[in-house]
Length: 418
Image: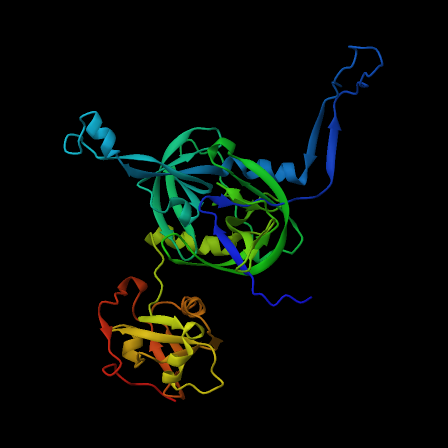
């Protein structure tokens, strides 16, 4: 029987999660001695064979190339002291030097990818470092060093940390994620459940490429990843760890998983659906973070509401033709920003960015972020039932957004072309 209930995939931002992947291949066993195991019926004479051998496979070789470059990242945050205990022991906030102490708030993984003089650089997930007042990085040998945040980007879920290079013995190499093939082996290395299980390796395959993973992080920021899907066993703590190929090259940074899917009535547990940020995207972002400490993206300067989420009685006021059933409604326009300058108004319904159809605000944001600050961008929208176009000069960055200063529907400039 056909099930018409719409299911919802529940994505877990592996804030402290990551993935594993499987690997096949031929295994060579190099035997050094050959002693036949002893097993008799006489009580007490069974023995363990002392056959000595060395296992060599594509998996072991790949792991050995990169495992020393995979680290644990510990996020410390300040926690307010317990006021009741302070009162009990006569230690008030006014008497103490600091009413808050740093405590471990979470752990994730990271990959050392560069040494430059006295510094080495680690890539991890944004959600691993988010909210940290300080960072600590545990190297593969168990030594811990102070980490300094270089920059982070919520949208791509990536961050860069700087550590002293003197103790770094291995630097990972990035592979070309554009050349990956579905079904090829892959390996994930990280710290599932935290640094206690650091440098755990798991195996799998690449299940799919170019999976669109869109979710909200704990700060309600959009995360948008064009991800590698693996049949990874994702566990908390693997986030930010390495997904590698059989050559030991990093082809992705593990980021999230689908934990469950279900209807409104019940959830169904899901296994083997993990996602990693492709290495080519990682390299582009971390180079910018090293240089600027942030990723500057263009701002349109509008607040948006999905048309499909609006009550039907309000849709009638938009005077849309029957053919327009999806799009993004402008709820407010900020003065002085590109949308206002190009003549967009409150209640306009955007249906295209360039040649890309947009049906949700997330799709609009994704299309917008393909442009750079300073670019011209064509927008197709509906106003009073008529299709219009406008060319918008993306002259402002997203840090200029402030919707305390919005343009009313009647006072926005009009300068659109049909």
